[in-house]
Every structure is written in structure tokens, then in C-alpha cells.
Length: 266
Image 1 (cartoon, rainbow, N blue to C red):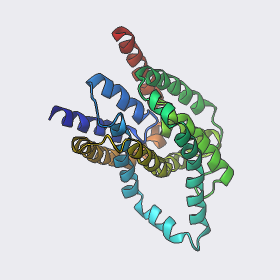
Image 2: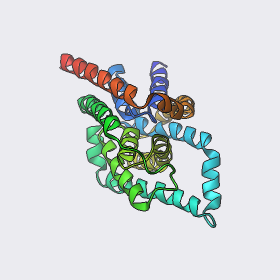
Image 3: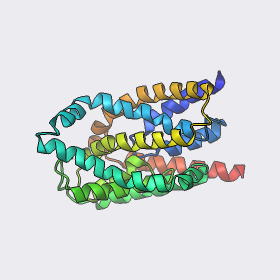
């Protein structure tokens, strides 16, 4: 029973952090290491419960997703929206599949996460200062080339602790996209990216999954969904008022504390 409640806690952490530029995977690795959590199928738990958070995006933005799907045959804006999301997803799909084993090895290192949290926090502070006036304020207004460049930025998040949301949002802003559009594009880009990562992880671990493992995954999935709903509905308003600096300082503090704990533990 204790391991089930730990799974729920990790689901809560996943949902709260998936769409913030603080690295949900990094938080899950550090929390799992601290709590001694041994989930099903060698880190498959951490990857699969992210689908709970992705479902929250689908619920909050279901009208946008529905309209884009229905408008594909006749609406140029809908086609541009879908094209840009798929193009941005492409680099992670290709590189992720090719480097799967190496990425899984990185997932085993809490120190990698801690260092990346600090480095990413510093990068966010720098980008917030140097970013120029945006020239793109809608997803449909992005060119195909811009979408592909944002997708290349997302590849950086394959290093645990970098943050998929952080890499795509900060990369988008550097490339001239405004804050709100960058954040929303990160939400939509998460859908194919995390569905693909989950499918690959489940396929690789298909012989190791058990009923007990499925129960833990289901509990974490539900908790991730509920907590992500809160974040997705409030994130845009928060960054409009405060920007990304609070997340940067949070990353730096958590990363430095984690480094200190890991060094003391040896």
C-alpha cells in the first residue's frame, strides 16, 4: 500500500511540473531516488504517467483540437496549426527513437538532473533579459521552418533536467514567438511527443509489465491528470503577470540542494 501512495505522490509531481519549465522528468527522478521508489519496468512508470498530464491538455483545449481536426480539409489556418505541431514533433521522434538506449541510461543519473536544473535556470534568466520584441503571436502564423527549429530546441530536453516545456518555450521566445503562444505551442507539442515516448517505452518494456505495475501506473496517471488540469488552466495567466524568472530561481535552488544532498550521500 505504501508504494501505491508513493506512486500517487509521483503522479501529483508529474502533473504539477509537466507544463512548467522546471523538468517533470527531473523531478520524478529526484523524488523517486529520495523516496526509494522502484516503479514497474525500469522507469516506464515515469514516462507513462505523463499521458495523464497530456490528457489534461486535451480536455482544456478540446475545442481547439476539434476545430483543427474538422478544419483540415478546407481551412488553411487549421492545416498550418497541424503542420507546425507535427513538424516540431519530428526531430524528437527521429532522434528519440535512434538514441533510446542512451536516453534511458541518462535517466538513471540524479546528478545529471541536478546540474541540468541549475544550468537551465540560469539560461532562463539570461533569455528573459535578451529576448527581443516578438514577431509571431499565433501558432498558425508560424512558418514551417520556425516550427522545425522549435522542434530542434525540444531535442535538448532529452537530457533529464533540461525540461521539455522549458526548451520549447525558451527556444520559441528566442526565435521571436511571444510568451503566450510559446507556452500554448508547448502544450500542443507535448501531445504527440509524450504519446510517442510512452508508446516506445511500453513497447520496449512489454515483456516486463505486470498487473501490479499496471495498478501503480493507473494511480499515477489519474493523479497526474487531475493536478495537470490545475496547471494548464492557470499557467498562461501566471506567466503573463510574472514571466519565467520565478521558475528559473526555483530550478536553481532545487538543483543546488539536490547537488548538495547527492554529494553528502556519496
